[in-house]
Length: 192
Ligand code: GLN
Image 1 (cartoon, protein in one colour):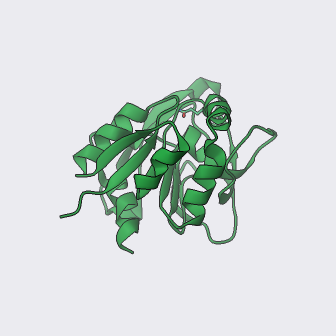
Image 2 (cartoon, rainbow, N blue to C red):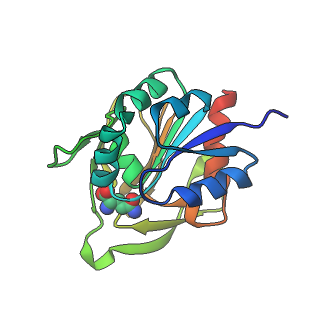
């Protein structure tokens, strides 16, 4: 069996946890800090953290164009939480740097202060009947879904998981649980 090399953008945030999830799926995780490191990767994960900090570092390291090309090549990209914010075309009320690869609008820190962080069961039909335990940490949600974007899960009436071709974005943190179904689903894009 060919082992799939998966880049994990490792500038800030929860990249180690994603690396662990990828390894648990049988993939080979590689921490990405330079554009040329993407050449060996078949897929890329952009972790949660702080989207402004990650964006600033991506800019400094010349990663914006490299990641846009990666996506334009049809190589799968999965963004979680801050990673979802960076993938969005529009960030409500904010002009911060972003990849803009997905036809979605998001709102940052959108669940409000009183529920800054919480966990909830999320039903994701493409993963089967058993819900995913969604860990939300100052999470965004999707406020508008454009052309070509499929809603894969909602919570409390808010869209929290979307797919556009080989791009996947989620508001919660699957890498903080032992459930690897969402990572496996993402890696299955390579077989489509
Ligand atoms: N609040 C962060 C942001 O908007 C995201 C939080 C996270 O990734 N856990 O960038």
